[in-house]
Image 1: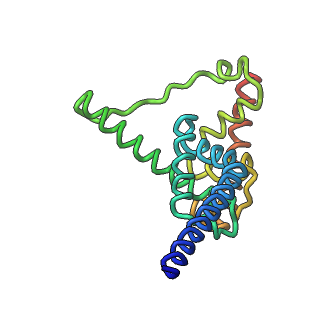
Image 2 (image 1 turned 45 degrees about the vertical axis):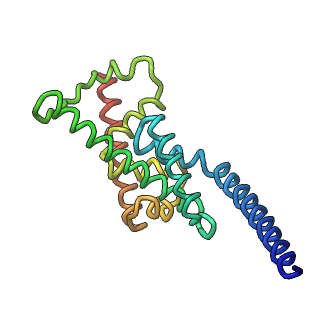
Image 3 (image 1 turned 120 degrees about the horizontal axis):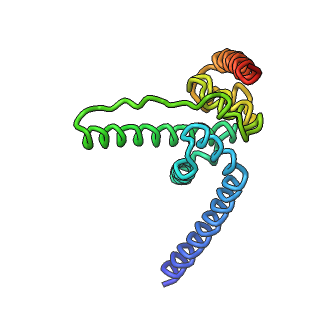
Length: 197
């Protein structure tokens, strides 16, 4: 009888310890969410360019992080969570692209190509400040240049962190950043020339 009582006591104690560990783990995860949610949203937004999709990518990333528990032993938290949300956002973009292609094939029976229509420089500049113009110029950069620039300049990530998030070497990040900045200067100069004429 005494062995059974001790076993029951041990089982209750083990259950209490598990509950305490679970509560502690949840509190740590809540801290991670509090520290990194904004960064993760901005990383996702820089890729998907849609608030609802960015929020979904962040939620998906947090679910993955919580389920795997990998966040418990990470050394570079910002880069790690940035990489996780980056992959979730990329997956979301790919799913959206496939859905659009399927929808276009279904509606018309053939793949459609959409031509971009642009307004004149004067129309784009009227009523907007330089910040909006700069945002538009950044958005018009090729993806391989835009993504590192957004993560570096806007999200204030180091070249090493950007490389870890995107999955490219740090040297490649620096090269792409130089190319992106050079391209922005050229495009801004062309816009200014157009406005002065």
